[in-house]
Image 1 (cartoon, rainbow, N blue to C red):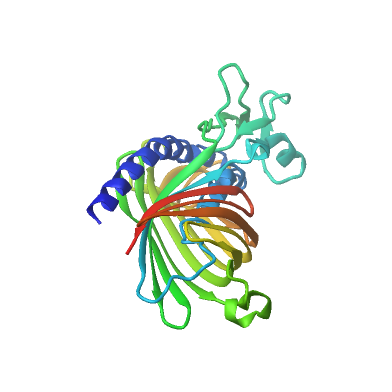
Image 2: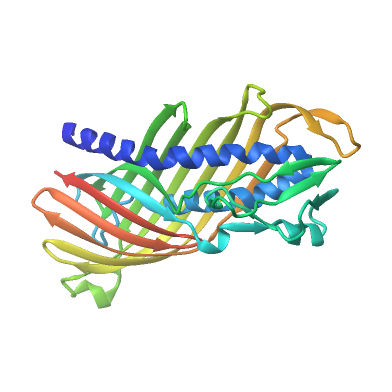
Length: 337
């Protein structure tokens, strides 16, 4: 267990290098309050969408995905890195289109030819024009994002076999509190049950295994933001994923090859929390408003995964690729006893 904790700390520090750049980009979302709360809600929904999608993708991974259920009393500990990938089609958001469709009120563009603004996970290069909005006679520059093509989230996974061909699992990313990152916590629970003996086709096939698995994962993050140097403000992220999967694959002495298909109810929301002073009002003045922006995302849909697990004495290695709204690669190393 001591070596497992050391490995987890090393993986955690590696992931933080990438996470800190992304957090700095998402904190810029408060700049959209300069065009009023209703417009800020519309713009921030598109701005944060890729970030929300990558968080959602990482929640798919971090489980012991062997198609064979562990025998009763066997215990496995894994350290996983789940990496969600940005889709290139979500690099930019078209502000001109939102104006034309009437989604934004009282906004015009300083330069009508510059209509595409960066989202939170994409950084426009120097020289690429960032749209400047005109609202109530004031110029409001659109924030730039960060050049993040993947979001890496580490976790520890524990699984144990219990009687009746069942395995229970838990995964956990301990609370982190870093000045540039904020407070982050992830946890999840899972149950896997072998259905090999229920299917006549598999009952006498020594290398084929099948199981059903249900999982629940929860993610929370809170990072400090500041609207015009104000304090006690934060961006709060909550995400959850409830999934059911059918897993089937080949089980050998040293390796498993598996595939799974299922459906997941996966949701997240982003809230600008706190009290914000001097926010432009539709009437031309300024107001004080609490929790001015909340965006809810629903990524529910089919889930697909394929991968391989290798066993070298007491060491377990697992690599899997999953796809739902965004794609995700999960890599894990662990021990069994």
